Amino acid sequence: MNPTLIATFWRQRLASPVRLVILLFMVSTPLLMVTAMPQMGVSALGEAIPIGMLFAVGMIGQDAASGVLQLVFARPVRRWEYVTSRWLAVALAGSAVVVVQAGGAWGVLALRGHSPDAHAMLAFVAARMLQMFGVAAVMALLSSLVAGVADLAVYILLNVVAGLGSLAAQAKGWAALARAADLLRTALAPAVEFDHVAAGGPAAWLTIVAYLSTIALCLALAAEVMNRRQLSYATAG
Amino acid sequence: MRALDGVSLSIAPGEAFGIIGPNGAGKTTLLGCLLGFLRPEAGRITIDGRAPDDFAIRATTGYLPERLVLDRWMSGRDFLAYHHALARLPRESRAADIDGALARVGLEPEAGARGIRKYSRGMLQRLGLAQALLGRPRYVFLDEPASGVDPAGVVLFRRLLAGLKGEGVTVVLNSHQLDQVERVCDRVAFVRGGQVQAVETVAAGAGLARVVRVRAADGAIGARGGEALSALAAGAGAELRDLATGEARFAVADDAGAARLVEALVRAGIPVAEVAPEESRLERLFLEGRT
Image (cartoon, rainbow over all chains, first blue to last red; front, side, top):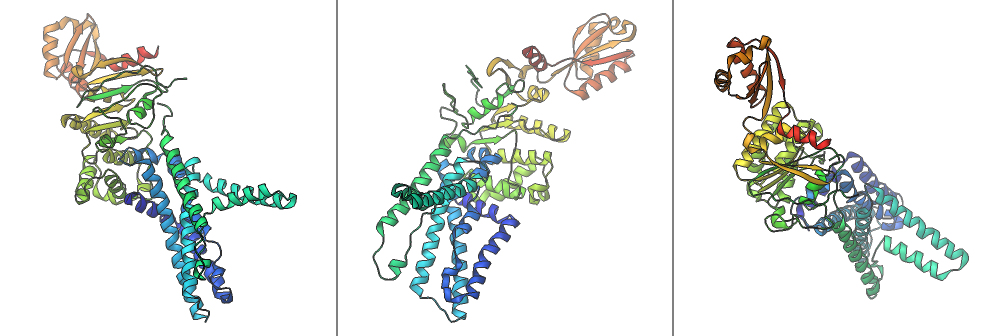
């Protein structure tokens, strides 16, 4: 991990007014939902993945497309270090936002007399934070493969494929296709749910191992892609 | 198609080495290989006995790319601080190193505080060079460093490169500005079709790099005789190369030197009718290489 790369990535992401406006919208709109429907609890916050996406899109591909990478790799920076720093930067930024959002939701619910159980709240926040680390790893891989912000398009496309596969499997009764679609969907959004643990149940070790394996595999593949990448900027020379 | 083929070069420590050649010759590809960005299919590149992407080499390398792309949301100082940190240079010397680098490339401290998006092309190039010089590198790779820079900047860059040579820094310079290459470099490789076609030593003629042809009315220049003309030229900082009836060839350092020579000739009563520059050695090499 390289603190300079992480800090600079955060500054880069927060330097965009458009991104800040979208972030504000993504954080505040679900909070309004919680305010309007306190009986739904924190589940009214909805999906956390878009928050991670906001930081993750183009995390590597934009640097590769713009030509910034040559200057970075002319310095003593290992390519795996660059990949993991980007991943960590996205995951930590996303985690910080989901914590702030959950804190806001908790405050709103407390004010409205629907104070959530502390254990359940903790499990909810932990799951969303882990989701940030998971989706950041997937996006690191996709962003290492395609230039610019095409990683978002690939991510959406893969989700659509998983959804269509699931529908086709249901219609035709193909169990293998249903399983494949489910695997793809799980791989695209690695997550660990703690509801069961918060309720006093045992930890879902298989899910945890699958989650960690997916992250490790994505990061290893992204690092390998970057290691193999030749940085050419020759146009007329 | 091979971008580079059969390239074999040795660059001595502290040498200023130029790479010239027409567009598409493979110069930038060669630089990319020297920097470890591109991996050749065959052969080996070592810098001080190590691979170009070895961290010990990376830590002592400065690089300015041809197409400089910067994070435009940063200020100039932010950009230099970022690269200072990436280069693992001591944090305690960061502010002083950045001030020094900005001053070295002729950028005011206020310019350093300004956002990069407000920089002109020339300022960006200066900032890029400041970045390359952070931490006093031992090896500096420059790809068209004076591209987009104003004449004052070109002179500054030339002085800077001469200063780097004086400090024993190994400089590899890829440039289309042949006069700059000729003045700065000790040796020059002419690359064409992915091959090094010639390696010329230019340092010996660096002092008087340009040759001008002077023609006088009525063959007056020939009538003066070689000895008198040599003395006249020496007084103007030039050198008589050869003399024919109607014209003489003089070696001069630069445009100002040519102007001094003409002034001296006119003052001596020689009716100068025409002064024309001849191609420099590199220009001749370049033009002959293209045919």
